[in-house]
Length: 158
Image (cartoon, rainbow, N blue to C red; front, side, top):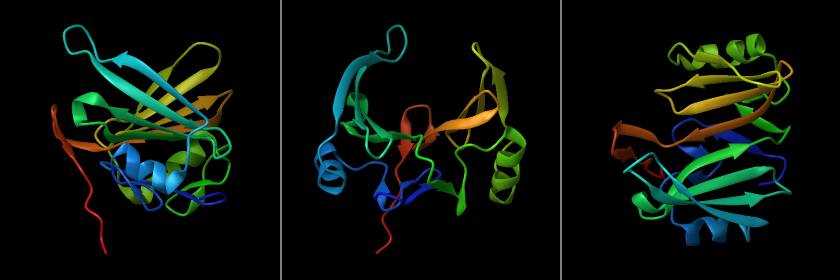
């Protein structure tokens, strides 16, 4: 997968699809550099999540207990990551909006954070763009949802 990371909104990364098991993911990606396990969710709705980190590829993958440990979220900071065929890490917010425009996503929410960080979120599309000092540094995206509790798992096209 090195030198090729096409972000597929709601679907996954390259041929890796949301909804696959940890074993299937490991067969496709190899052993992670590190695995973090933590409680996610809020209040009464807590559940376990595992985040698998692949330092060399600059990606992380999350698997949630409440979704039978299936792949639910990916993130990348690799400078060769692409969206709609264009490299995006290092772009400004305005440059990113030009790349995203043909995808006809909803209007983004923009949140100014501490330490010169900005978060641009397309909530319905389940994709977040993290900016540091005005430049895109990381993309995080996940499976889309039919409703609050039901993931809309992508279907493999063979």
